[in-house]
Image (cartoon, rainbow, N blue to C red; front, side):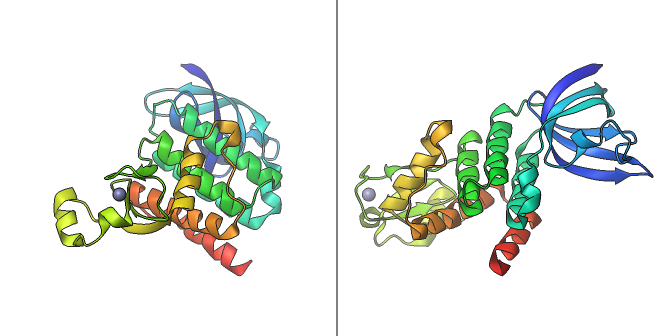
Length: 261
Ligand SMILES: [Zn+2]
């Protein structure tokens, strides 16, 4: 059956002499692998719309066994990504994570929109890549329903403390007074999970909570202090990666790029 979808090309693989397979994250059907006949030929009518990082409209012949591309037209190409190596590497990471968390056959409207927003900002170079990464990671945890509760200490409820422990796998803050003197071993017996703790200042908790809960048009409002923004980036990454329980080659590559910048 022919279906019309809109989606983002997150990966392409060469097949045979001139074909390619697109990995699409579509709003309607989640992840789809789509065969583009002749997609690598310069003369192909799919050429422009089947490049990586293209967001477009696609008409696909969808069967149980495979999907074949019929028509494709580009809505956004994010050309700015190709001018900035670290932005491109980060876009790669965003696409890899998006593909990883998207289920075949299930709509992916919100996660797709988040990724498109981030690619747009990266392409326009309107925010530093490290901030885009922080926002993507934090907002994604909320869309996946695994976000931490950063509204205050999970024991005493206080939100006016200078320092907290962030229990990553439980997604909870414990203030230093409530967490004082606890033995890690006893805690891990209670929670039955590996305990990964990061220190978080009150200012960092407040800032991360705002990013997670902000309206979409305000989600890039991060604190001006570069040290806080850097620390938020470390926390958001550790939090997401531990919850997704895997590593990403594209993330390692992005970090290498940043280091050599
Ligand atoms: Zn407390």
